[in-house]
Image (cartoon, rainbow, N blue to C red; front, side):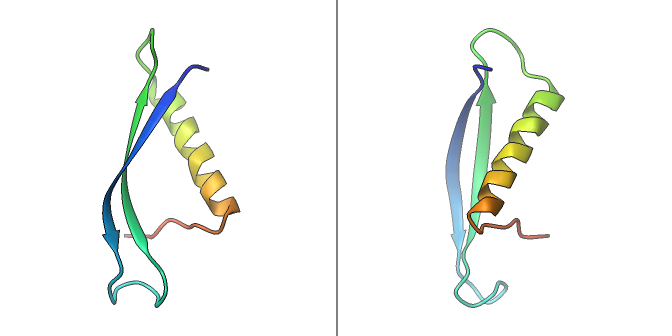
Length: 64
């Protein structure tokens, strides 16, 4: 599908607002394609795939 994804870590939180021994990471995700503008649907699909892969290795999203 030729979509490139760049992930930048911008925050790491280890404070008292999350479970002891847990870490909260803040990430920026950048999606690009060499020849076209990506649609919301294409980006949403990639985000869902990333979240599924993270869940498979025991990482969860923190609700806000």
